[in-house]
Length: 133
Image (cartoon, rainbow, N blue to C red; front, side, top):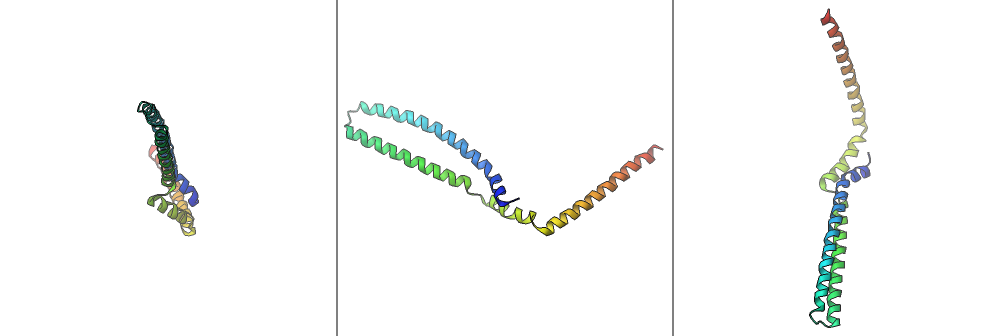
């Protein structure tokens, strides 16, 4: 198993969380848009000059753009930045799994276990026949 495969496996939960946060953020932004639209309608009643209205609108748009940009960049960084545990897992597991000594010993242990289980099954099959006589 390659380190990249392990990385993507450990990142899937965070990608799902990012999507959930994206949906939640979209809902909040729609509600915020409704509120801001109401504020613009309220500005109509306060006899503000067109320049003041434009300045307020420009500031609100800049704040929204900066907020979106910062949120998106930080969300992407947090999603794809592996944790310490994930990084240790990604680094160590391929070294252990791809180690020739461990693969050789694992196959030997598997063969020994298989042989032992076959002997146990053979002795279990023979014992009930002797007990029935």
